Length: 235
Image (cartoon, rainbow, N blue to C red):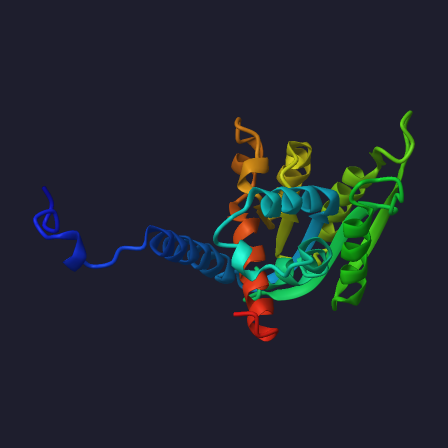
């Protein structure tokens, strides 16, 4: 029996497992950012797989997470989508953010997430130093499959690395197809951080091993949702 085991429950000190877990995660997150901050010139560029983020965020809000639900607005889908660009940039607020590139295909009106995708595009266009890079839809099922988006993202990471435009690249996405691009960027002397939903990572951990650090995107969204709720007086 531990030191508190002999005490009645009514007088034992309160122990909030969720609060302790969030505190530990926040400390780990800050420790990773402090390590990256030690770079001589911490210039950051962000490369976002937009559809991967949209699908992950939709799953996040539909699952019902107690650490996120209190902060999201009632019309969560569209309102939260417009906050994605700000949440991603604020996750790296300690760095000199050069520019973020959001890679996606043109908005397809026949897709279920048409409204959310449109809201994200509008949010990107309104956010400072954020650019939207659009591919296209194609294949046998027109409007159902993106074409050339991942290639554009990989080329963008490599191009800016070789031009010396950043010291650290943030890859927002969990697709292991990006592993060769990540390794090529690291070969130029740059660091690569992956910001993604942890459940989107494959079990073999290839992307985790390739990147220098992996951060949880759910924590970044939670912090942004909470700040928005405070600003609007909802909490």
